[in-house]
Image 1: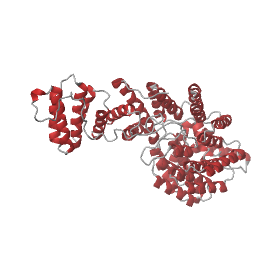
Image 2 (image 1 turned 60 degrees about the horizontal axis):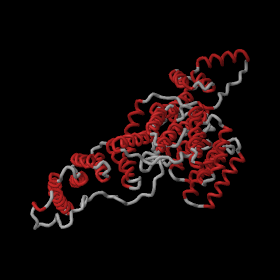
Image 3 (image 1 turned 180 degrees about the vertical axis):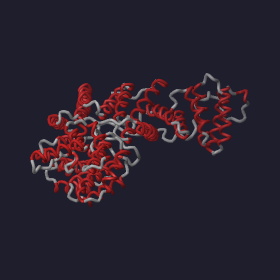
Image 4 (image 1 turned 180 degrees about the horizontal axis):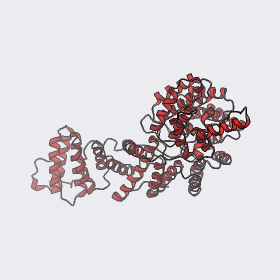
Length: 576
């Protein structure tokens, strides 16, 4: 369940950033929102419904009354006659007589002088409102388009057209319109923000599904792979192979060398030690096809690397086969396969299947500390903190030297206290972090999670020190540089230093999708949308799951929509 960065949830009941941060062993990305990537101001109810038609668009000259039935048409100007028709249409609209309202608005449009663009735009927008009530969405789009051509910053018309595009399944057009609305409203209208968030998620899922299906498998960086395996303590396939002792020196040594020569699994293990990861799947396949001595181990190792390259579809049959084995000597392998399949289900947002797998693993191998460690992470994602802590405690009982479990237990307790605004529990959790890093001074994870808690408490200087400790222990861990860079932005608003640290992360690991995503986030905030899109696309190509890819597409589409809005309407959001 290791990954390089937290992932944006994809549904209404998705997983918050901080929870994924715990599960993958990385503090959350500060300042990245589900929609646009700047801080939202408090929402207002202004223009929240946008259902009713517009009232009077231009003042009627004194002495004139558009509603005056005794007056003759010759006494009114063309604009006044248009206003009178519009006002009559409004009455029909409020009475629910939409056909009559449409006729009146049409009359107003035909009467209005073409140079009166604001008034004319109002009449088109009002007719669109009536069409909206009749759910004739194409007509809504047409009339709103006319209104926006006449008045490019007409919020009501833009939002109404966005909703019509949503009904017509024109997601890209909907996104552009609602983006313009959000910018014009200063990101203060809740309804606009919700629609933007909704369409971004739909677009992200749609694009990720197609892209992920056809993507080329990509091996992650050696640092990521080592970090992944370090989250297991009872994983046979990641441990150095224990060779059998020979009773007869030369004969036995010769026999062992023959076994090594023929065993694809043993070659794969050798490649693991050499960090030659690209050859592991093919060597495991040789062992499986030969039905060799290490077939179970080869299936599990191959499945693990399928998961690492993001090919869950290929991993699942191998995991299923290992799990179905009944031999007593493969109990530990079965439990490990269940952990990995359960983690895969969790990543696919299938918590029921994930829970079932972890519970089965605990039944099969109750003394396996990894089961409780990884199940504890699942419980955190499901907001079951007490059960998570119980699992971490069981992991620690079985493996008292498990620094990672102790650090994550502290982080779980801290988040519960923080979200519950309990000062005493927060203080106790912070002391717990101090105890962990004192007891395990070489556990980089302890410093990283403590740094996140310190950042929440605005103890920025000490958080910075903790990230420095991480870097001292793991100088090749790119994600730590990203988090330290984000801290500089939050703490000192030091944009240059923050960007330099994130650039350093990319220099260390050019497959660190977290770094590209974060760089894109910052470029959006700076108004450098083309650069942001470039960074998001790099992150998309490195995404390790369809869910993660969908999140990245949402960010990229949000940035692209802003470029289109800037071209069409000259609108740009606030920047750093």
